[in-house]
Image (cartoon, rainbow, N blue to C red):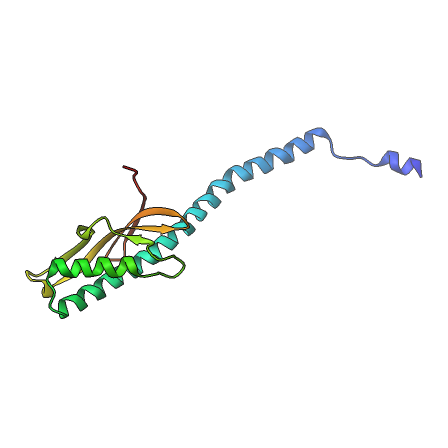
Length: 148
């Protein structure tokens, strides 16, 4: 019985070091990729809320103009509506505007010929506020909020 145990051989130190080096190289390649996917996943929340905000802004602008409000009053109505709405997965007051100039319009000369083309707001997800801009092409830009 003891003769069988003496004939068994284990891994050498060199073999173990080679395996550790290979694992380290694989980790060096994999970790940055995983981290970028995690960031993309976090930004997806901001993007989905931004798309909903743009649709709400366009809807509220059309409604305000149909009610006879001018451009400034329509922008104020948008700001009030969006800031008071609770979006899926967020708490109330999670979307804020610096002012009504964050809502950009384009089109004709009077309010009825214009439409909301770009919205810039601050969206807070899980206590982390980010500045988000979305245009009518659904291009979303997410950036950190600058502390002033």
